[in-house]
Amino acid sequence: MKRLFYLAIAILLFAASAEAAPPRNVVLFVVDDMGKTMGCYGDSVAKTPHMDWLASQGTRFDYAFCTTASCSASRSVILSGLHNHLNGQYGHQHSFHHFASFDHVQSLPVILSTGGYRTVSIGKYHVAPESVYHFDTYLKGNQGGARNTVSMAEKCRELIEAKDEKPFFLYFCTNDPHRGGGKVESDSNKPDYFGNNMKYDGVEEVKFDPKKVIVPSFLPDTPACRAELAQYYQSVARVDQGLGRLIKILKDAGQWDNTLFIFTTDNGIAMPGAKTTLYEPGMRLPLIVCSPDQKTRSGATDAMVSWVDFTPTILDFAGVKPPTVKPGGKEKPKPYSFHGRSFLSVLGQEKTKEWDTIHASHTFHEITMYYPMRVIHTRQHKLIVNLAHQLPYPFASDLYESATWQSVLKQGRGFFGKRPISDYINRARYELFDLKTDPDEIVNQAPNPKYAKILKDLQDRLKKFQQYTGDPWVVKYNYE
Image (cartoon, rainbow, N blue to C red):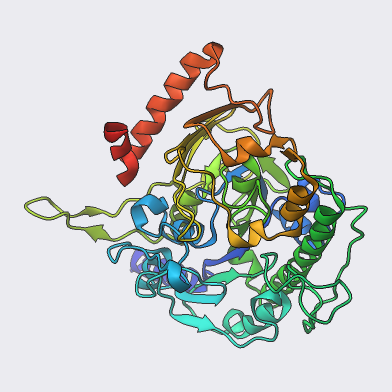
C-alpha cells in the first residue's frame, strides 16, 4: 500500500510540474533592409541601446547570411526553410511582380499552429499565397503602421499578457529602415526616403549629423550619401525603441524567461552595392538570438548560419516536428525536409566546428530584375556564379533613384565606393573572392591560375548544392 501511495504522490507531483511548465514562446523580430548598424556590431554612431542589451543577454552571430537580398524572396526563405528557387517565391510578391510560393510548401506558421501554437503576425508580411503562409491572427491598425515599432509593440500587449496555456509565435516585422516616401527637404513635414519627419506616437526621434555618420567602404563618401545615411540611422533608432518596448512588455508579463527571441533583418541596407546583391553588404547581416536554454550569454559565435536555418531552429525549440508527406506511388510517407538545420546547439559557443559553409540563391527582386546568382561561401573564399552574366546588372527602382547613386552619376565618378562602376554593372560568369586579403570583394580571382584549384573545388560543391536543393537553374550547366 505504501508503494502505491508514494507512486500516486509521484504521479501527482509530476502532473503538477508538467502543468506548471511555462509555454515556450517564440518572437521572430525581422527589420527591413538593415545592415550591422548597431553598437554591438561596432558601430560607434548608431543609437541602439536595446539591440545592444539583447546581444548582452544572448548570442551575437558574426557570420549570419541571408540567402537572397530581396524582401519577399528572403522572407519566404525565413518562413519556409527552403531556398526561394525551390519554394517558388522568386521575387517580390506585391503588385504586378506577382511572385508566390508553391501550394505544397509547408511554412513555419502553419506547422507551429498545427503543433499547438498561437501564431500571430504584425507589420510587413510580403509573402504569398496567404494559404501557405497563414497565421491564426493578423494584428493591424496601430498608429504609424509598421514604421512605428513602439505602437506595434503595444498592439502585441494583449497577446503577450493573455492567460493562455498555448504558447505563442509572434512574427514582428517592421518597415523601418526600408526606403519609402519621397525625396524632400529635411525640414519638411513629409516623409523623407526613410520614413522620417512624420509623427510616431511614443517614439522619440533621434537625429544624426551627416558629417558624423560612418560611411562604409562599399559606398561613396559624398554629401548626398552622408545625408541619406543620417536618415537611415534615424530610422534604425526608431526600430530600437520598439524593440525595447516589446522586451519590456514580455518582461512585465512574466514571459521573457520562457521566450526564444530572434532579432534579424531580411537583407542589407537599401543602397547600391548591398540590397539586391550577394556581395557581403547585401547578405552578411545582424543576427542576435536569446534563448532561455542557453548557458553562456553576452558573447559571439563564429558559426556560419543562413536564413534557411530559422525554420528548423524554431521548430527545434518548440518541440514541434514537421509533417510527414507522401511522395506518391508506393513510397512510404517521410518527414518533410528543409534546406537548413537548427543552430540551437551553437548558442553561446564562440568557436564551432562544421559550421563553416553557407549557400545563397537569388533570382529576382522586381519582375524586371532577372539576374540569377548562386553562391558558396566558406571561411576564406566566396564564389558567385552569375547565371545571366551576359546581361547588365539591373537596378531596383528606389536604388537607382537614390541621391547617393545619382550624385555619383552626375559627378562622372568611375567608382562607387572602391568598386569600378563598370565592374558593378558588367559582371563575369564567375566571381571568386579571397575574403582574407580582399574583404571588399574588388579583385576577381577566378581568372587567376593560382586560384584554379580553389575555383574548381567551389564550382563542384556549388553544383552539388544546386542539384541537392532542386534548383531549376541547374539546367544551365547543360545548355550554356
